[in-house]
Length: 116
Length: 111
Image 1 (cartoon, each protein chain N blue to C red):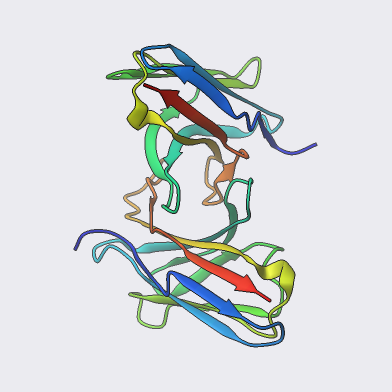
Image 2 (tube, each protein chain N blue to C red):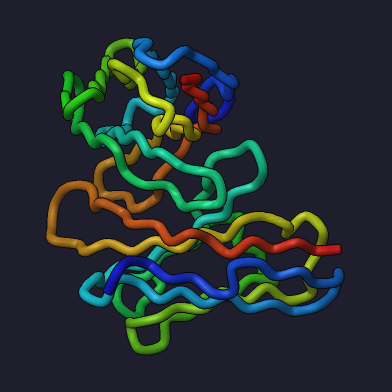
């Protein structure tokens, strides 16, 4: 297991279409995070899972966005009825929560979405 | 006002220079402070991680946190062309999983 894997790396779609991104975390990691990064900005938190439970969602995650982690392993992020403003890099990260203190996140290379 | 402010640069230095990167923040509840490095078309990778105020050194990199001033810094000594990347500061409140990032500073180290 060499790291966090994200697919596809780049998706070009037309406005109004649905897209789905997949993230395969490091296998022993129990926490999984989704962030969004637009050009010239730092990543912004979207949501995170501990095992299969989605524990926190950002206000950025509108009702067109849904994330799942069905068996506590891989995760999907679906965007319905895409808008041009959804164009961004979608970053997945994972970590192993061991208790108190901050977790060290390992990020994937990201899935870039371009909405035409 | 954004929670974390970071000058986006760009910053261009000659090889061997000392680089200073900085962030300020407004949320006094932040307890964990990190620096990530992001190469083009890659995800961020953790460089340094500091809890509360103080200094931390790792090879050519030194991270400083001054909670009284709400100011953090990353110093890179003897900078190398391979250090050319975007450097992102990130912060976390205790008990939260939501990392708050700065905009990132794009650094170019010229040979």
